[in-house]
Length: 208
Image (cartoon, rainbow, N blue to C red; front, side):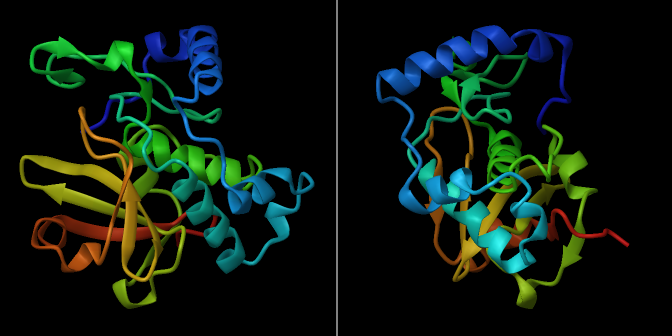
């Protein structure tokens, strides 16, 4: 499971912004593609009045623009990719704390960034998978649309992962330390993901 926001995470904003600027300058974080940049450049308030389908497509475009960004445990906020961190179990790779040296996203950091960016701040999700699951409206599998969030659970790790549905059965997600933000085709037909699927939610919609 992902960590709830910590004091350390909240007080590292200056360092995160500095590192993100360095990463962007060095070309380590992909720039937004044309569709995602158009969503970003729309006048403030535009996203609030968009139909849900159009907003969801913007979310999917922003997610696609982040393909190839590294995974960082605890990484990602409203500004985009950021330094992560390590705890007792997470953020490590072959005994090395990669979280503290990687500018990137974890799964819920990616989803919160994509929704915040695409909506111009009108939809803000917490940096915690369970909190995101409890926001928005449930969506049936046969009604999935771009931008919907897909949640996954195991008996030993309830609601341990979230990804962004981007249409045609595909998901974009940040999976684990040592991987990059990636696209999974026909995700709910893949045995591993189908067996862990816990439901979908549509942020920005009433949860009743």
